[in-house]
Length: 286
Image 1 (cartoon, helix red, strand yellow):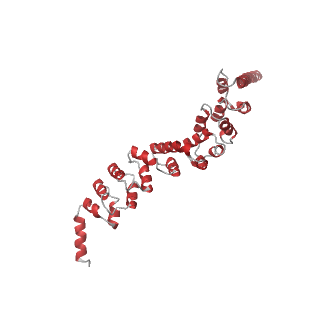
Image 2 (tube, one colour):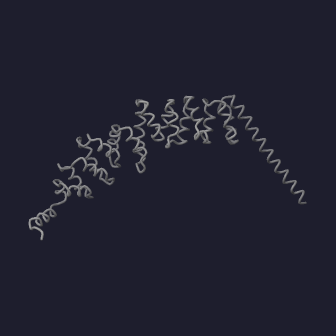
Image 3 (tube, one colour):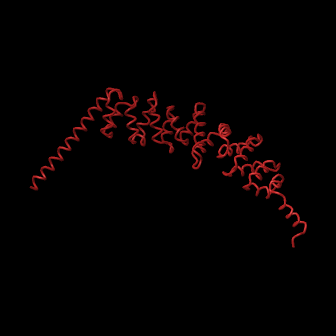
């Protein structure tokens, strides 16, 4: 049989409003209140002197945490001194934008990479993390640039490719997050280093991409030999467009014109041969 004092204590606890209990709760009761859906209870919890850093972490793990609670946490400087809470706040979808931008500046390099690559992270947060990585690039030592080249998001990989560092080039071109769109952005830049163009042209994957080949032929830093090796793969319409005056160097333009004419003539001959064959077949049938 339960002790009368324990029953009295339990009933008294139930009678006390949840917001009042939140101000002084400890132990299991505090842990339970961290999952409350009542905004007032959560706000009261933040005033509880027993609330620990781990408890704040539990709150911030809730993606549905009310904006008012997030804003109150952001006001408490003692909590913002902890790196784990800074990261949690920076990643929370309800953290005010200006606060998030400030916190992102204080995160470690690879944590920014993680945020930029995590599925389910908002597009805005990914973009903010990528912008922060891009801002840091000029000051990074070579070792960290190589790490970013290997594991960083596509936009950052594109910036590293454009820098043209010989130790970074082979690593960044093998980045699993890299896309042809980023390659094309780099090739479209004015004054892109010849070493970058050459590395792309020799890469086993990117040199086989049609749009990359087309961009390489357009790029003035591509050698004539490389451009000529791609001509047979280009369509007649693209060859004709590239052969227009002022798009490629004159020496290459002559080859483009010749290849365009050869293709046109070959096409005309093919049509003529087909028509002749059909005429012969028709004569035989008659």
